[in-house]
Amino acid sequence: MTTYPNDVRVVYKMHPLPMHPNAMPAAQAALAANAQGKFLSMNEKLLASSASLSRDKYIQFATDLGLDVKRFTSEIDANAYKKIIDEETQEVMKVGATGTPASFINGRFVSGAAPYDTFKKLVDEEIAKATK
Image 1 (cartoon, rainbow, N blue to C red):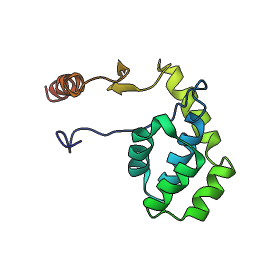
Image 2: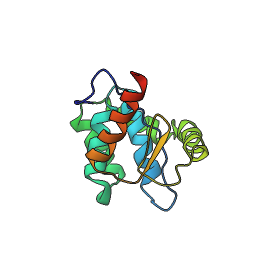
Image 3: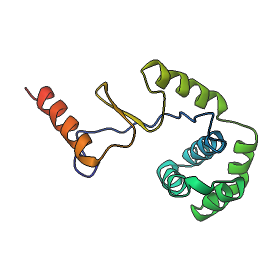
Image 4: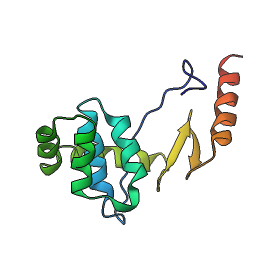
């Protein structure tokens, strides 16, 4: 986003893998934070702590981010975002993403965690196509 502030749009879709017991709760926490305008900040905290996630951590992150913690916990306890998460999971699986992370640049699939240069090359190619 820093390199291409006017040319790139990032869209996140939830795809919690069932073999990861904390993936669904983390997705719920991310969307509960999103409802309060703090998706990116929560996402960063979740990714940085992915090896040791727990309900207590989600609540601590919500507190650290200045969220309405009562609303946040109420939403995650009620599985308020499960339907959205399930729909997004189906959507990404239909386009070929079977694992995470998965990225698409104008429909071009990048599987797994790729270095910045991989993304930059694809974005540059797509921008060149669009400006011809």
